[in-house]
Image 1: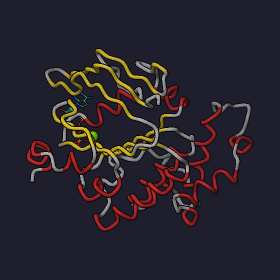
Image 2: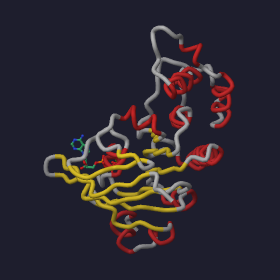
Image 3: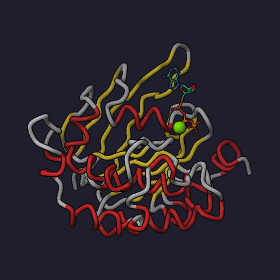
Length: 246
Ligand SMILES: Nc1ncnc2c1ncn2[C@@H]1O[C@H](COP(=O)(O)OP(=O)(O)OP(=O)(O)O)[C@@H](O)[C@H]1O
Ligand SMILES: [Mg+2]
């Protein structure tokens, strides 16, 4: 099977900080990867390199067999690599529905001055996405007015509207009250299963990692310190002391 993501010797330093230290990594279709690691370990940097937001000093990234090293984020998204952000990137002055419409319209073509947004929208498609993440009742609310948990769902819905093969989520539950985290993940993971999207999420909550991941990779100082089944990695003595603090 061809990996969806493959990196070879990815390296990036910020001044004296090595944020990606020769990372060799593969992710396969159907996996649900959780990435764990302390603040500053390089989890977001690795995502930013894979999605085109940062260029590595050395090394290469392939997405689904295509060399995407140095490609723009926009081109990489079109190939089927979606992402959501540590802080949701919404069109804050637009409604929930409009946010998904704008995202869906970007899938096949640029928005142009000659063709209105309305003419490019498949309403049924948008409704389906709204239902999938349970935001139909909020469809006409301004996205900035949503509580954080729903903003996170909208961010995921906007990424799903682009019909990705892989969705990378940077801390999908951060900023959400702990009693809401499991419900949020339940909705997100169900939506990803429905759309048959492979996923990779950064998460600090061990219970969530153990419950939703099929594979865990632990980052320490820009390197993958452990990579394996949740059981293996979460019980690894080095990971317990240096990452989980237990
Ligand atoms: N644009 C940047 N300029 C300078 N240093 C950066 C930049 N982005 C990240 N860094 C540094 O690189 C290291 C890795 O940061 P990164 O954001 O990837 O960590 P992280 O694992 O995502 O942490 P967190 O859990 O806090 O989100 C840190 O030391 C950070 O300060
Ligand atoms: Mg981060």
